[in-house]
Image (cartoon, rainbow, N blue to C red):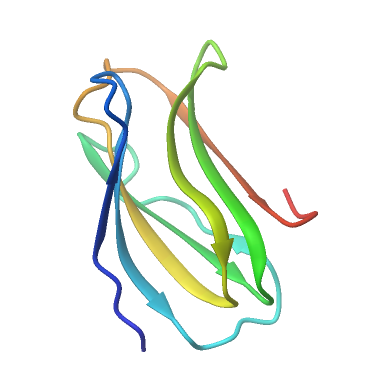
Length: 106
């Protein structure tokens, strides 16, 4: 297992922050976005995803008005299993959605 601890944040105070918890070199057989946990969350939740092959990846958080409030992952990732922590501490209470894109998978 490859361990990555990486803090990513936007300078805008209303933006969400994320921490990459792990990236595993075990290659899954399909693209997959897992249910976040805990759900509901306050203010942290874990989001994991799987990539069967290397791809440009985007994982974004949206509010109920469909406004993007954070980008947790953006860039090229190798095949494997990944988990990030979404920190919604700077965001208002409410319902949030996440969207995962990897290559042509969405």
